[in-house]
Image 1 (cartoon, rainbow, N blue to C red):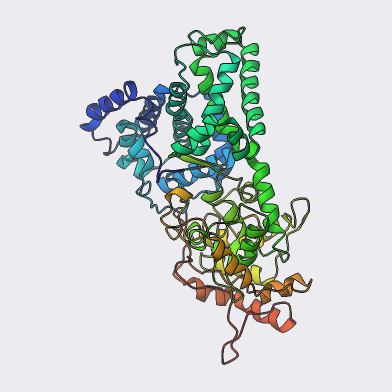
Image 2: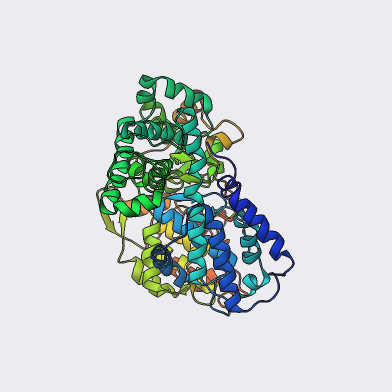
Length: 580
């Protein structure tokens, strides 16, 4: 369903005007050495001109929209570390863009995934921006001045606006294909019925991706279409609702609508629709589809939570497959595919387990997969992180401040009920150990803090694997069998050696080695040079928190997972460099 990385968003959309313009900029500015030093004002002008050129095929971004983007980015921007000029580096800008699209639209933009390696001097292996936008934009973003000086909040808003416009305009090529297949000239206006036909066909193409054979079968057999797609009738109502929104906008601003669409079919008083109208509806579908489909994600998560009575955020693989055999058709990914997705915990003595939030966020559960983005389930950790960021408003904080904030939050025991967060001595010691290795403060945008959040909110926050050890590949991209065979699922179910444990949740968790996947490896999203210390995390952990473990053990509050031959306690950590 998905290609490997972000496709050529701009070249496929504006293959004549903007490409030519991009080439013109490339030639005109190549000799001007934008990679050399330029003053701040010149850089601001160059960046905005470059972004404006990239947006040439999709229209300029309004000041109001840029302001709204800045407002959305501001809480995250405040908590990201800055350089000496108070600006972001490339890694931070990339991270900021990922968070924006994931929080606002539940989109995962290809090339911006957190699992993809990146450093402070590169956008990452895919080099998304430099490879996909006009050469002049690349020359500005990759200039030495950009590297030395960095990006402020306004720059970040321009970059996000450009990517946003390119993403949503990229649907134009698919829409043109649908017009052609439906034998409807793009230059002629459509009736309301004709637009509905286009949108139905578009949804099939959009949801099926590159499966042309499947697309042809579904569009050629109405009965099969209505039975093959879950809730197809609701999908139709959703598309119709987007048309109604367009009609309402026309009624409110008929003159603006006519000017906007600029050719027959754009009359707000007539039930006729131009290609631009259809394109507008398609864009609104892309932006709002995740919220429409969230009920399916909730139902899937609820099924997993019923298999996790101890609230560890994990489901034994045997139960996962057992449910897949008995009732839940969605739980059928192969063991190797789950491993690559980062949804499999293989560190517990009780056997392999599926990590609930990692599974929910996995590419296999993204309802729409295109070459340039995925529409996925909402990340339940986003509001948790956002609340912490809003309260701290700084790149790092002392453990006491974080604990005071998090202890006032709630965690889901079910989809209907929430309870106050419980942070025991073990988790407190882990947080203090993280701070000890960073000069007394916890970096908010580091792997260790996100790992700590996972164990505080095991059903909401995904376990953060080390960069490059997992991959978000859609089923069709995976090399191997992405679906487990009936025999494999049956074998796992029959080998189930788990038993129902007592109601004492705290002790049961510890007996389960529920923190066995913990790793001491840090990985920072951006430079925290002022916080990093020379002491290893393990030694700092022992100094800063291990005493609390010993005291808690004496008091009976902590049940350690196991003992060595010499009866020496082992920490509930897992020291593998790679988790899958």
